[in-house]
Amino acid sequence: MADFNSVFTSLANVNGWMTRDQAQRLWDRAGELNAGSTVVEIGSFQGRSMCVLASSAPAGVTLYAIDPHGGNDRGPQELDGFAEEAESDHQIFLANLTNAGVRDRVTYLRKYANDATGDVTGQLDLLYVDGAHRFKPASQDIRQWGARVKDGGRLLVHDSFSSIGVTLALVVLTFFSSQWIYEGRSQSMAQFRRGPNTLGARCGSLARQLAQLPYFALNLVYKVLLALKLKPVAKALGSTGEWPY
Image (cartoon, rainbow, N blue to C red; front, side):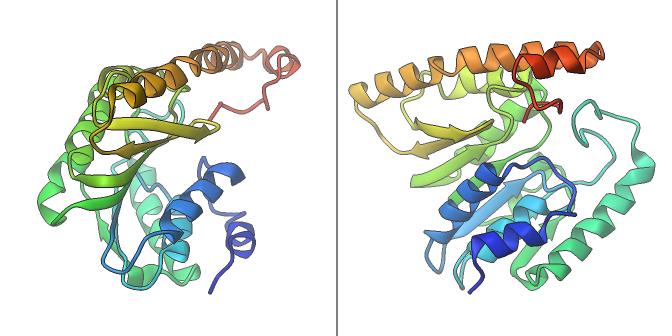
């Protein structure tokens, strides 16, 4: 069996926005699944996160990677105009899965998430959302695919409390939800558990999410400073100098 350290080290040259802590969270959630479980990832880019998920998931777990590789919503500040890179991202994604030895484990759906619902049957045990970060598509992904997660299943959302659109989607869909309980985060990757919950659990979940808003505000400050090309100022305030994720 692969171990996390060797897998993460092997992905050093695979492009993507995923910290070591975030990769560890993906690894842990996939590794605790059982044969017959289903994992869906929305937004795969060049395969960094799916390589982690597929390397950790036990035999018999079904994994879907959904990404249109259409040249839009490609990454931070890369919303449109990357048509030439689209096919390259597609080919690099497949090559990275092959190099990681997990290509045959992953069903790749080169579609937008809302067009792929009919390609996945049954309930989900783990859903990882890292698709378009604007409010409408982010909320659509969380609402539409989150409804497929079984009770006790997990939802992981990247760029939570970092992207404005994703954070607003969480405010609408998880802050006051009777179904989603916030369990914590690794930097901007938030984790939720689905299932009927008591009023006390819901209040605790809301309080824990509200407590992340100062982190969100700081990330917005970093983004403004980086956009203004004031990286030294951002670093002086604690930023890594990279777009926060």
